Length: 329
Ligand code: PBG
Image (cartoon, rainbow, N blue to C red; front, side, top):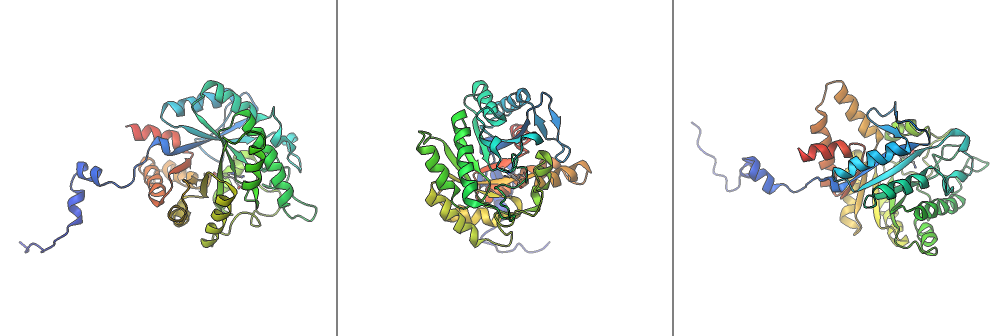
């Protein structure tokens, strides 16, 4: 028998059984924290997405059904990503503000079926742009910031008029939050919120998503607009601009490799912070689980809890529906 240690404080006492662990738990995960990203296309069939096993490119009917199922599980918001037919893609992405386009149709159908489900739309040109960039590509190959912002404003107004609750610019052009805010306000759309992709990094973790939408850049990369993964302080600068320009919520993307950025924004800004667990993060968990190497449920809930603990109150995740089921068990 060894002598008991003389310890005034024993942290393990707060972990001694499930009841105490529950009382002492600092972070909780709930379906209410989730925004569920959904892909859609103009076709009548629901198609599995090869680059993202378990995800589907929904028809309009399938989308409305899937959104309803998610809503019934306690998820109150979805974000839409359209796969646009190649013949509709142009250098200036005109289709992005077509009032009868895929996204406005989807918003109207979703709002008719599920009026209390918040619909978020992505504001960026890449699904509509024949060059596959988030902005218009000039003759010399540069991304034209100010021209792009004027098109993004038209896209945001189009989505807002169709009934979007939140527009979410993911393009990283300078000045787009203020311009979109003004474009909405002068049209009486001042109640539409802006969730800014504030710190969006030029990340290899987006690969599977670009496969899902066939939206990879035709040439070059996105490094002149998306942030350098090596930078943290720069995220604070982006946040300051977005807040001054009228953003309602700020997003960090990707999530898991950028927990420090989530934490820095959450401790310095007074807006709700969102984080996007992106397609590459999803795929790594899915493939590890498919190989039988990791426990999918435990890894998913731990990864989402870590993102919450870092300071994100809102999480965009392809696991949203599955996690909502697990959280009810
Ligand atoms: C583009 C956009 C991207 C994602 C969301 N909006 C890809 C990109 O910037 O190339 C990625 C999401 C994911 O990987 O899950 N506007």
